[in-house]
Length: 151
Image (cartoon, rainbow, N blue to C red; front, side):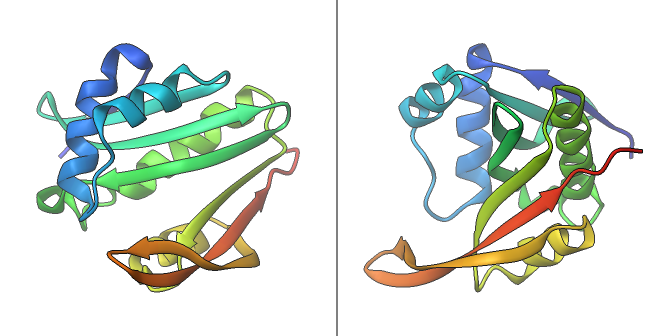
């Protein structure tokens, strides 16, 4: 199944919000997505198959550092490499815009996401104790970093 990945902005906040809600147990509200996309340097990618949005990547670029804010793929579209393609497209896009490094936080218990980032060359550079609040249960986040090297 061929995926199309396009860059989008604030006009697609509702689509990204719907995707986020379909991907995560604790979805972000439309307002939060809109506020993120209104920040300087913020952007998003949407991955579609058969003209149906299946996943997204939300990120921000400031100076030479990019931050992956969130990546998600709908459950029915998982295990087909779509998250990896989104991540590679994000790396390519931010590198072309001048990123020298990319970082993100991910829950220590999110093994699928950690495997995705590690496969993409990211490495753990830190830990945030009690970063996530999952309905009163605190969990740590790992900070991952990818150094962009010149080719």
